Amino acid sequence: MWRGDEVIRWIVCILLLGITIEAMGAPRGGELYSAHCAACHGDTGGGGVGVPLSLPSFLDSVDNDFLRITIRHGRPGRVMPAFRQLSDAQIDAIVRFIRGWSNKPAPVFSDKPIQGDVQHGKQLFASYCAGCHGADGEGGKGTGVTFSRKRELPVIAPALNNAGFLAAASDEMIRHTLQYGREGTPMRSFLVQGLSEQDLEDLVSYVRTFEQQPLPVKPLVTAAETTISAESPYTLEETIDNLKEAIVSQNFVLIREDTLEHGLVKEGDEDPSKVILHFCNFKFLFDALAVDPRIGMFLPCQVTVTESAGKVVVATINPLYLSRLFNNDELSEFCERMYDVYASILEDATL
Image 1: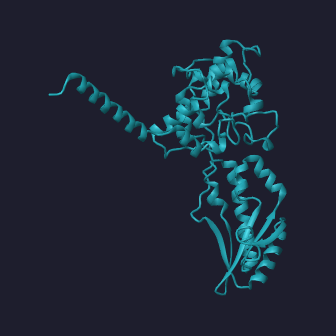
Image 2: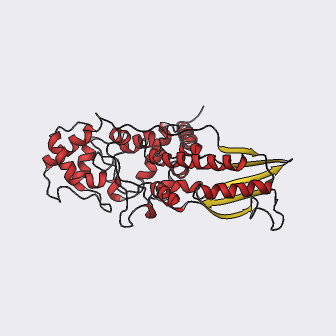
Image 3: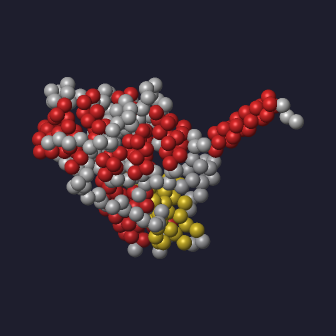
């Protein structure tokens, strides 16, 4: 016969064991953030390609639903991707981790629609908002890194006509941002600027009309092939010479020629039948970086030439394949242009 205190101890042990097992299997927000968010938003949320998430004025002005929906659906056509592969529990864990940068509780906003004068809001938007957010709410250009914007601007104005933003932001949340602004960003309090509380409601009502007339979003370019390649009928040396001529004909500058294994094996042991050419059009490069610095993953340009068993093959990365990673329709245009350049160079060198 078990005594009562022994039974209680066993019950406590079982409960603690269950909690421990559950904790071991629970999503870890910090690890998920590092894997999916830190590359753009910074390890500590300070921003980079993405907006600074740890900014106190940001955390004080967005609720957890805004964060959840933003992670789930992203911003179609902009830099922020949709994380549809994450479970609800994983997204909740990321939200808790982000919220940990603030010592204040998350704000709670009503989902009740605000009714204001849309036409008056449109006039106010043109006067007070369009300069940063665009005439049609399309948002600012570039990203959050310093070389793609003026250094004094901590963030790029978001797209207010974006379906992802409109789904995530409640009317009350938008009004709160207008009322208090966001310290540390160009967004100032509209009350301080002289607008009335009714003006703010009129502005919110106008911004909500973007939902009724969404601007078309260009479909992201997709491609199944990760590389572009072509077999050359010429010798390795002849193919390299052809490539150099083709590169110059496309208004690109040859930066250097090197063995593909340079720096990967002991100096002198490089395979001379594996060659890489580095080249660039610097205006194209800086224009693309100003839109999204992630394009630096495959710019400046590189083409490899390899010879094996008497066969010479020319190959390069497929920008159309990489473009789907960016979720940025403006950047996809650069990827399409870069694909055309690569295809022309390979064709000219191997005909």
